[in-house]
Length: 306
Image 1: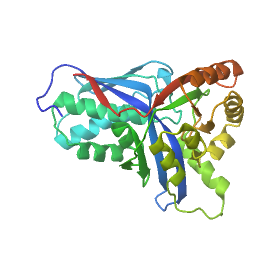
Image 2: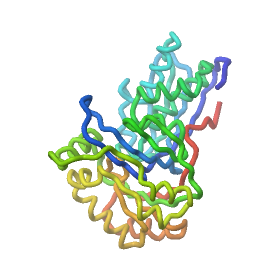
Image 3: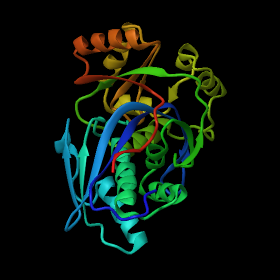
Image 4: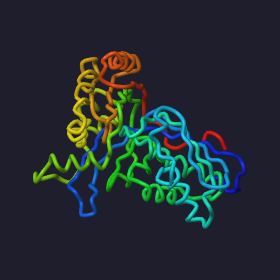
């Protein structure tokens, strides 16, 4: 990291994620769940720019920017405050977020902003934080934030914050259908618990078939192995998602799933041409608000200016 304090802005680009496996264990006493969460970073990005200011301020532009909180609850603001507190300084920065990751869509947009702001503030202030310290701060901010910093493909254990890189042998092509409105992640987990009732829930583990498919870069094999334990809960809370999933499947997607806690739905396809075909079918289906095409894995938070 940069070690001399800067007087200019720093810009960081951070990707969205899709969960190719989200195995949710039983409810823990602390209210969380142990996870086996296989993240894949995809090429939809938020761009976070941090500039010196007289006080901490957050602004946002882009799709659904009006739905992004601009107060200290924003993960980007919390990241700046966390790093500043560790260094005994004021978090006097203007954080501007250019949104392109769907808001409250199950693709870790808020987490991406937190990781981006953390990397940007570290570079702007010349704090020289180690990667380990940055990951520690990320884990304090939220379960998905460490992966937004790392990117690529990784297995998340614990609440998802304990990461192990996963070997990936190729590029996977995706289509994402953006739903109207968002879904609350805690509400989806709560609905998952409700639907499970008193049934036995095993400890979560990554699928060997899924890991083999990722290593081989085999989209067909991956399609047969993807899973999301939160999907039933997301569809229960938002039944209209079923029509979107069906539309993508009928258009030829290899696999259709809710992304994370939703309500964005993700469709794995064989190549770029198939992605455009499925995307067009979803656009005309009337079952979603917007459609995006992306591929991954891609790197995590990356400084582009500064």
